[in-house]
Image (cartoon, rainbow, N blue to C red):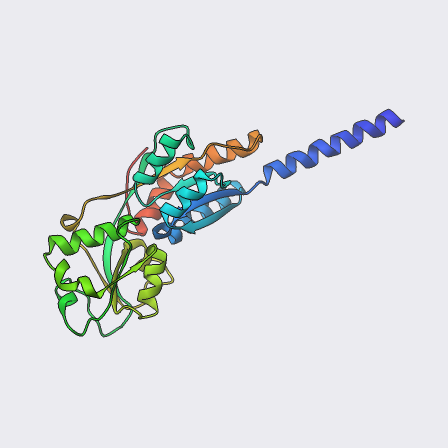
Amino acid sequence: MTKNIYVVFLGLVLFCSCQREGKEILHIAVAANMQFAMKDVSEAFTLKTGIKCELIIGSSGKLTAQIKEGAPYDIFISANMKYPQELFKNGNILEEPKVFVYGKLVLWSAIKNIKPSIKMLKNPSIKHIALANPKIAPYGAASVEVLENRKIYKDVEEKLVYGESILQTNQFIISESAQIGFTSKSVVLSGRMKNKGNWIDISDEDYSPIAQGVVVIKQNSSSNIKKKNVEKYYQFLWSKEVRGILQNYGYTTIKN
């Protein structure tokens, strides 16, 4: 009798353990420019598999630093290839990073009576122009490249206000602290921002391609189920369904 009770108890423990393992949440570190797109992607993944995901949004530089310090992220989607390469050299990932998407830059104003153009940035009525910090943010570096290629950087340099990431840059624009600014096309195409103000595409000829990478972080978990779920998510990122979502947000996608 005692033996039977022990077997039943052991079976319950194993069952509960498997249930817990199967419900482990995936932690996806996401560059700020991709927050809206990856929310839709992760929701589609959860609907398809039942596996829940938590997005950690931030600048690629900060997320990279956190990963190096042992943050328990499973997958990292960066705003460039530089940070994934750093993680590869540092031994935080197993395989060389791949280009996931190419981002697009836009000029955006949340003020309805402002019709954005590169030329108008020199106008005295424009006091502040928002962009991400070009020293650490790929979209910021691309924005400076645009100003330099259009030969107006020195004319507007004193007007530039820098966000730590696209996230903070967007806050400057939305709050109208800056009358106009450069951001990711994915932001203005998101449901929350679609009808807020006016924006224009920046020509691809004015800045270098913004190649964004994706990597799987080395797993600390001993759970085989967790590892399989991470692999499922990574493979899902290259699916036709996800390419469609990303294209709707203005990204140029590639096949794995």
